[in-house]
Length: 198
Image (cartoon, rainbow, N blue to C red; front, side, top):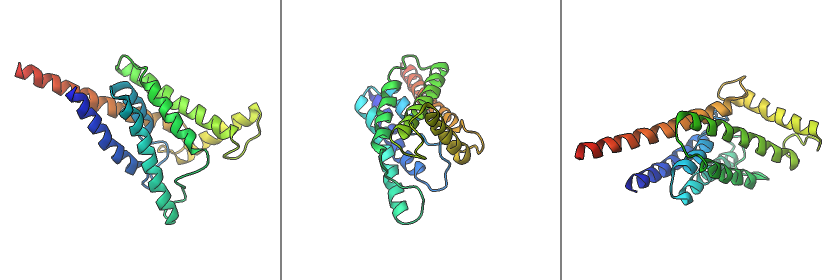
């Protein structure tokens, strides 16, 4: 129980750090930790209130920072926009998806990370298309495919690996590896301490 409280507090600290990280102007898109935080929180935290709140709060704080930077003319990225609530709802869905992870081994972590990224990509860009956002592609199957192409072009041009449209998947894999790796190491060191005491 105590170790879970420590993990929760570490997660809250990560909330603040990730909010600041995501809102730093000039950092590449697709390399933010929020999707990994949602999957990790759902999979690891027994207190689901924190698991659901932390990624949402991280998004909101970074959006707030973006908003003030945008108002100050320091970034072209607006902090708040139409349809943004759907993004927050998607993150709640990702946290619930992470809670389906029963075994926490490299294979399942990789699976949930990749599929979580893909689910977010598919659903968020479907919502862009259905709500007439972005380039306002026609409401046809071809229009939907064009909308997904627009999103891939965005990741290709602004991702942390320029020219590689799958960078958002790679970014989520890296963040998931970090979060679950630190969790594993913390748990292992706690077991070793208990063994030494016994």
